[in-house]
Length: 157
Image 1 (cartoon, rainbow, N blue to C red):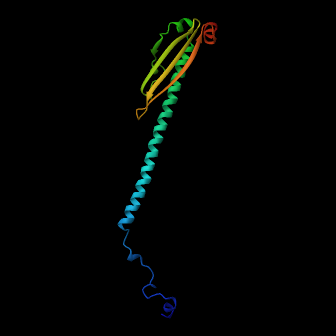
Image 2: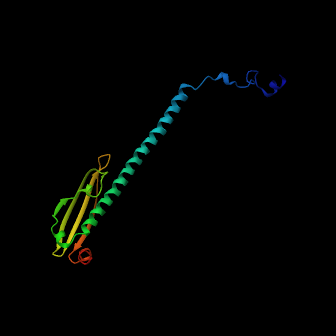
Image 3: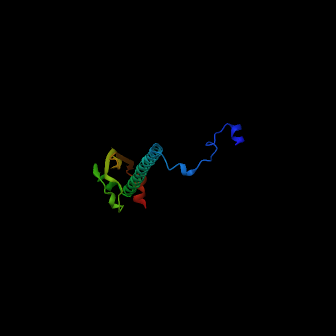
């Protein structure tokens, strides 16, 4: 008792804190905790949605590049006569070389332009839409010349 008087503490203040005195969280504490949790979860799901969209765009772009390269390789196997008979504008079928085309609403076009009597410009383009409906496209251009590299390889080999 003497010690309590020296420190200036009352009799009630000297009692140790009991866990039984506190029954749970207050309503304010619960609301603050729930708000913080909701903000963290909303940010996580937003980031996840962005990551999925980026991943789809990368995969679609890679597939479009493979599709265009495959079609260019086939064009390089044609001789000058076959190149000359290609229509000025047209389309090509992506399922000719690929069993599954993972592009939404894909459009594959080919444009052949005469640069001179011995040279053609061949432009291939693939267009598609992503999951948000935004349009994307990728194109390749090659030049084919009579008696040029690809025509020469076709005639000699």
